[in-house]
Length: 470
Image (cartoon, rainbow, N blue to C red):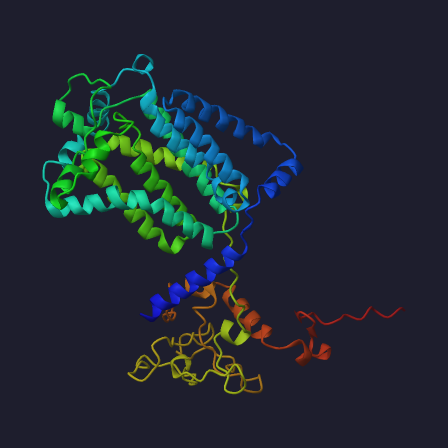
């Protein structure tokens, strides 16, 4: 419960921060002033393309009311600063919706012929069998619900939720990137469905391979069992009156799930498993509910991948990882500090100070992460450990040396994954040099004396006096 409360608090705090940065003005004069001050660039030509596409579909719509309401309503939303912040970037998405909804008004004489056998033939040639037919041979109410949730519920609400999270937590420019990639992907997908109409598996189940025509109604396929289960007719009515009845290829359900998983993986990598788990479940549900063949799913996924990388801005290609807090030299080399602010009081991080090696050193009260000390080159056969005080000529006690396997990666590689080196194991010649460098770095510059051979950055060779002139 505390975790949920903390998450909601973070969500609310982030929302307040983002909302405070919005332009809350309702004056169209402010938008017109920005438009007059704007200098045209080549990328603005895309709005000419949007205008031409919208004009084409508005011309086909027979209703005069819709021909007036759609452009006037959209221009009004663009003129108001508060709403233009959201609807201007969403132009590709709105154009996709207009294209999909208005495609029903294309005259039949201008439409291409409907292919009934193309997709099942490709399915058999590419995969050796009709995968969709195999997946639908066994049905069960539990499987129906499992397939219905991603296909009939999350598919329609997921893009709105992801858009909100991108706006709240993703870097600047990510929301426009999402709108462009998602909108143009669906727009191109609908255009392909219009130019290459193909029958879905439900048509093969109902009509076989008999020729199809545009007067036929759509079918909810396996979602009819959901209507029967809940006593409703929502999916039956919706799919029967769909504007694109023969739009099996590519699967825009699979395309949307794929591009959502890509965005989640890129901007929220901690949720990568959730994103791709949902995508995989939806791939299966599209075939189980007899709405798509496997080739449709593959085509939709490829379309999503192409548009994701095509529209990705360079500044968002690599998300910077927050820098980690630098560690002190005591943590870096795993040396215990008995006094001062860096002293480790937790017994879990304390290690025994003994320098002797014993094969029976492990005990119940020894810390779990303590590692046996290393064995030096000179005394490996005698079983004596290497330590900072193993040199008899060195004065003072710097504390026993413990193997810093977690802090120094090259020691982990030499010891085979972080454990202590076994007796007789091979040690690289540079190992002693690296260990010496570790000890040298612990001696501060103020403790070094030039008379003892120390320089500002470590040990320096003694100065050689020039030979006396004869």
